[in-house]
Length: 220
Image (tube, rainbow, N blue to C red; front, side, top):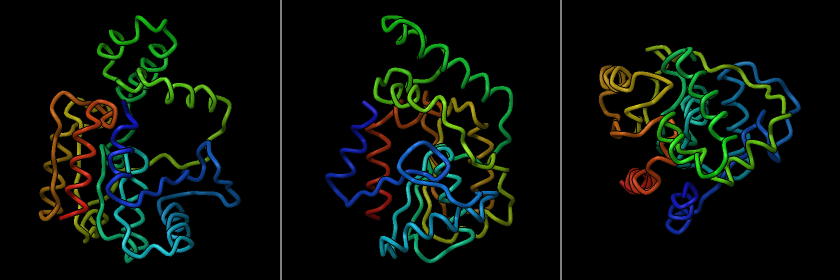
């Protein structure tokens, strides 16, 4: 189900999916990524090599934090941001790590049990066989990425392009209502939507909604 929103976007717009440096994939890391500034420099190199000047950046979780940092440190190539339950608004606390562990255990359960466990732990991603296959294939990969720190008020005020924040009401990463209030205070022109019933796995919880909101954001 999760790939439906990718297919929907690809039918309407040229779509470039980037293998994030420091994660399993085709990208090869040759220089340490120490902070948001380094991450922004890498993404800017990617966009420059593709000759992209008006990117509609879409990022989920860590990818959202990466997109925000690119706009903070390397503004000029992004025309808009769509941020799907992005990291960078709260420290990674016990609740988030418990969610990750519970999801991992549920993913290892027999197939017939997974739908019930997915609802119980609030992680619909474990129902996607392709995603789980990728997760298992990457188990031995040693990630070399910084833990996203909480973005400062000053950093958020530097986001000057049209921005849409999609937040899961049940996100294990942060308190979505507090995040929405903070964005409204610091970025009054940004649009924020809290999706009822959805968690941090928002693209798999509500794939059609996510696709529709992304398309609407980049076309307006």
